[in-house]
Length: 407
Image (cartoon, rainbow, N blue to C red):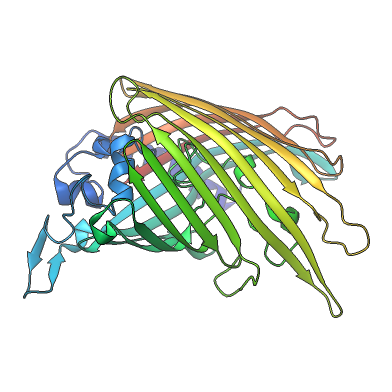
């Protein structure tokens, strides 16, 4: 047994003991907005990172309390007539994700045979996320993610809010998620990882500008809201910050939500995305025009939260060929629900993507999970992910014990 393996095994009980102690003490600090406003995490989250309705309104208002414009006031000190500065701790938070146990069937090639793999004490990532108001009605947010072998920056964006004195006119630019305001939000989801239907890339990822509808790409959007209505229109550049797509991609969202009552925060929405993927050669440029249409609804009743989303996607030149373009369509479904009762969070998700081209592998998985939420900002859970397809190499089922914290 290797020294690395031994260290990982010994790491598990140490993490459980340390965080178990912290989870029941008053020493564990909370995230920046709880420090700034003096509220609990559950003011904005149901089971973090999932936002509740209040949290959604807080975020769309530029990290200012709903129906206020307090970006220059709360927790900040005035220095001169045109400068207010807050505490660093009120602007910076940390997230931590550890996979204590990972078991995957038919995932490790050993002597020409696919066998079960085991992993223990795997540090998935640590994120530092500066976010909040620079000043009144101007917000910023980013996630700086430290992994074992790389550092990445996600969701780096700036927002201008309540322009011309109305919530109907707000601008965001930076790394934006097109489905952020969809009823099946592309951000701060119930459980990881990202759903398959949201992760389908144009041209199967073979183009120079291949994008999905869930990831953050350089974009600009205008959105507005007036209870019970919300809308957004956006334009997206290339797949990377350094890549410019001359044709651009466009999206729009319309959403109706329940502002009060037993179903407060429930919503129904329609999302549409249209774009162009390309692949250049020495003599020509191959193009793929693609669309994604997705209706979705979210039902909330206190501790119960359920989402259903459907997507219909079409690419008119999936393989980016010039001789015989192949049209490929796919249909995706997301159905999930979560329920919190006495610090126990029950969750199940069904996720599928079906392609009309037999050469492309369909995706069908069901994911039940059970979490112990010791504190507003600390949880540990067991998650299983069952493969419902019949691959030739065998079903890849996963069993994980995950710990997540936010402070």
